[in-house]
Length: 219
Image 1 (cartoon, rainbow, N blue to C red):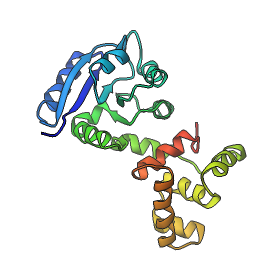
Image 2: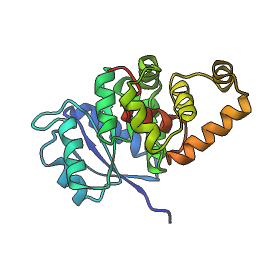
Image 3: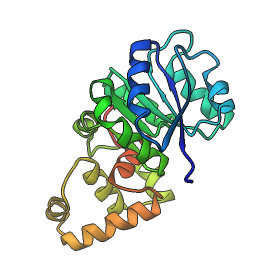
């Protein structure tokens, strides 16, 4: 029998917890191992429960989601985190992704996408709900400082790869990137595949997350 995906929930609204529990109980591949109504001792509890994925709100009493993510990082625990929030401020999205969150879901559309998010993250992929993706893409820019360009390209990426990464992150199609850089669409696709392999990500969303982590976007 396949191993179930072990989920822990954290949100300060019992009604929302109950709603998510009702949805997740319909999936035989998922096991909810517990929940909390605040962030206090959340990291240690999740670790003790051997949860694979923590789904949590950012705005929680006693210890908020940002503090929880920092504590996960400090302690080196392997549980993946999906943020479930009513906030879609880009600075907040950027911060939680830099702190290692694997997904970000808007509470408004959680019911429609939470199962997909869990399965994607459990498979090693990042997941953003559609409105969060739109928020990210609308905030992307092709501008980086010379020092940032040097840091990235000198360690990992060529100048051309960096150009293509930024255009991908700005939601340009392969054809549009080719026209912008005067190269063929096939060449663009080859670069995209090489970027995915070189940066060890799964898909275009992974490339966007890399761009966020390396400040290839507006603050």
